[in-house]
Image 1 (tube, chains in turn cyan, green):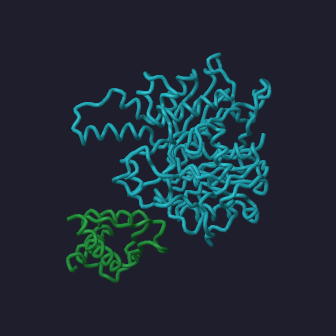
Image 2 (cartoon, one colour):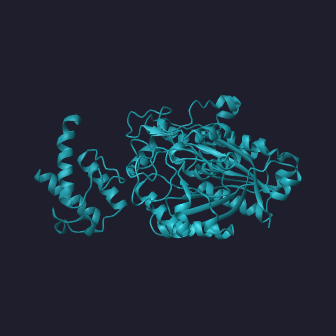
Amino acid sequence: MNRVVVTGLGVCAAPGKNAADFSASLRAGRSAIGPLTIISTDALNTKIGAQVSDFDPATYFAENKIGLYDRSTQFALVAAREAIAQSGLQFRDGLGAKSAAIIGCGVGGQATQDENYRRLYAEGAKRLHPFTIPKLMVNAPCSHITMEHGITGPSFVVASACSSANHAIGVAFQMVRAGMAEAAVTGGTESVFTFGTIKGWEALRVMAPDTCRPFSRDRKGMVLGEGAAILVLEPRERALARGAAILAEIIGFGSTSDAADIVLPGVDGAAGAMAACLEDARLAPGEVDYVNAHGTGTAANDATETKALHRVFGDHAKRLAVSSTKSMHGHTLGAAGAIELAATIVAMREEFIPPTANYTMPDPQCDLDYVPNETRSKSFDVAISNSFAFGGHNAVVAVRRA
Amino acid sequence: MADVASDVLEVIAKQAKVEPAAVARETELADLNLESLDTIELIFALEERFNIEIPFNANEAGTSGISFTTAGDVIDAVAQLVAEQKGEKA
């Protein structure tokens, strides 16, 4: 079994369109949640989100390519370029045939679908652009990564709603660990800000009108975000042999299913996934320093996740630093696990614990150390990152300082 | 008001899949096994039926926001919202 390390990391999200800006923003404890301006909110109750501002596709892509790329694909490609460049790997030298691309995405080209259906239903258009389907399909971001970088081994998209990226990273980790792939490009992407999609989220009655306040007593729900994060994984031996900089080691993955309710989270499934991850990583609970929580800011998730943390970590739960960086980059759904693992890795490398922003008051049901509002300068060695999805799919990834 | 009350009871009964006669003002929604998504769907059905917006946030139920315990709570909230929002829609 190979030890698996991260040698490339790219981010394109609301706090920053590259890993360095993203890290600096988290370190400053700045919430990138603000007024939504990339779409009209006149007919929406939701006026806020964590959008990737000032994102001009022409900065990144040739004009003849832009028409094929939904916003979700654009974010994924930008993050993948950064990650692969940092890794120093050249897939076209033969490595591509032995490499995998496994990407998480919850829904896919929502802007493409929304815009085209509006043309059909509202404007009475008689035909759609021929790129409609290749642009909106959920696997498109992964396909374009393989095409741009020449990855010809296994590639697919994992869709498990808010756990998509953690599942993708978990699968990629297992493939590299087992020797099925010499390298893997993995992570997640999502672009959720369309009129139709937000209307759908509003109908669930879980959206916060003010901001995202995970674990705070006055939390009013989730705030959506968009973006992508991509990681390059490879065997530790290979990275050492070629002298690559190792950003972190992935040491475990655990996943479970609630098999209970399509939207309500459950303690058993969440605790089971964390316990499975610790077992896979051969970690004792007391060895974990930091938890990047799922922490959506809904009444149900934050109380349930806290209970699950108590169950898995026992007395050590109170000593954990637990934060939800969703308070800064929003809930990015199918990209969440990747953006949150990116947050965990940059924090581990730069020796700080990212805070839970927008926290105002303790909740008796949420009684752990959530690192409220203030970044902590602190070195830590072992962390887990939680994702618990609608549909009851739970996925947890463990990382260790390289 | 009487119409609103009987219409609301009918919508609740339909959502709970019980006979309308089984739902009265004092009936507790929990006793009708209306939980989680059922409550969200009930609110949607009421909004559609009365052409109103019900500012219900699941995260605030039981704290600062609108909370429905009994069918009577729903009737009162809907009646008030119908009266308030009639002017805006006219």
